[in-house]
Length: 250
Image: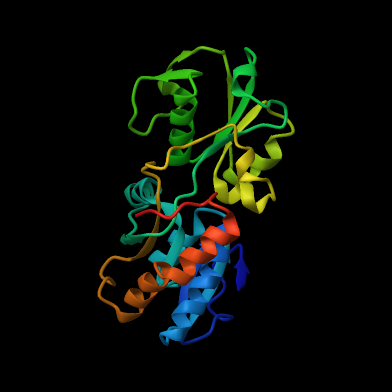
């Protein structure tokens, strides 16, 4: 697996391999299992691992990747709107529920007035975090459609909300009362997803998707990739490896 921070991997990737971009952690682990299944069908996959949420879509859009697997549909739509990418989701992969975590509290009922809360700073996951905080009863929002911190109409606990890059959130637990963290970063930080004080429901709209360039939908290698992601071998791997912390959508 190639680990990259910049888009400089073409010279080190296998020339004839299908290039799949993923983020570090669970997505990379799942992709390795997908590659094993796909190889049985004659598809060689070169997994390119990224350390942020921005570069995988840039790389795919400019043709340096054949597909990527790391984002949910609302994030993709926001990227397309703001950056003009010609990208399309071809299938669902997994749901990584957003959760509220703490190293200082064992129950959300114990949160004090003025507590410090860290949430993701990208628009879609930030909105997702605010909706979870509203569900927890801490705030009220004037809109459910991509809310930001300025959409908070009531802050019942006078929470101090800090927006941070998603990979920094596990480390922020040392300096905050609670943090709202994506499951992939929780696992990568070697935290236990089962320690979440609250998580999104199973019917969350934030299911991750497999993304390709618009127009590539009929490619045979894309079809094989989708089949590999939905194979029984990959489903069994996810259930065993992540102990139901990562869910497989219907």
